[in-house]
Length: 103
Length: 349
Image (tube, rainbow over all chains, first blue to last red; front, side, top):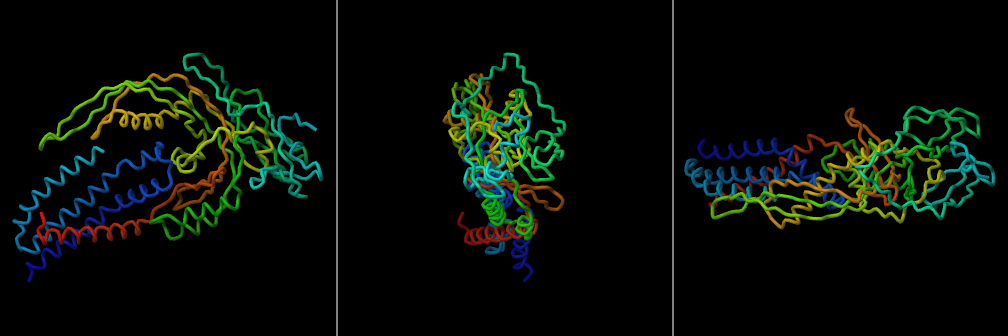
């Protein structure tokens, strides 16, 4: 019973941590939305406000990544196996982050 | 009758009833506050306020700073003493409320032109309140705070700068080679021009607010400096030399140059840009632009919302509600976690 609850508790904990770490990315997201709607495209203020959006991508991808582990753990009951299987996803994510960070 | 005193006042009185006149953005005329007679503003047709001045950084400059001390003037209507503080060039007499506008003197920092207000006070107030109401994750009392404040019209000093840049640059970028990331560089030469870069010369408008309210600038809308346009509005004179203006404009120009270099190089994955630029053909204007400013406070921090007096675009400074940010972050986190959880449970990848 406790074993089957552990992935759920871990997921709930993940939501709490992601939410508390997410206030800055959400603020950045709102600033980017306002910049896209209201600032002169191509102006220095627009370029400065838009830059740094990678923090939003990192927050979302990291949250998604850890959630895939807890989901896998919940389905298989095998935490070690879930972590092993996540390694391939992690490699893909890191390459994706390197690619988008440069832009 | 032509007024030749250092402060324009007689020219701002109604020729019909001698009442006080103010400039009305809605009509573009000087309007009497007593009898509502509208007076067309006569401007010097030979003047070219859109003309640009050349600037040669290597030549000595004789610009004299305008002293910022308080200057007392006697109101020609009621005789009361009116103090023009700091860089202010337009005031209302505190006794009779008459508009008083200081004429340009012999100083070098003369305003070369201005664009008059065309958006009125009521519309500016509506725009400022609508802007505040449209903010996501704002404190619940933001709308109330903003509606309790009133917009004030002010002519703010701005520079326009033109220049030609011959740029010698190097960009560093990353490319994927199989599973490896390789760093490369590319050298290039580029010639680019800046036309009418607007730089605020007053703390009333920050560069970010400028980018929010001034999307287009048409030099053809500039008018010669005429005190009647300032009647009833606050106004500031320039208090920077061209060299200081260019220095303040440098960070903005650097951001734009880096962006143009990135585009010119045609590379992706750029993570560093270095360049040397030879700047020539510097031209400038010293102008006044009309803005409506609404000041308010949030938790002791002064903030402002600014509406452009020409097109009505509005932008400003805003606070965030920590609780609302946390709630939004929790909402997004829950959605992303649910997506990831299902993905992991189904073992897609």
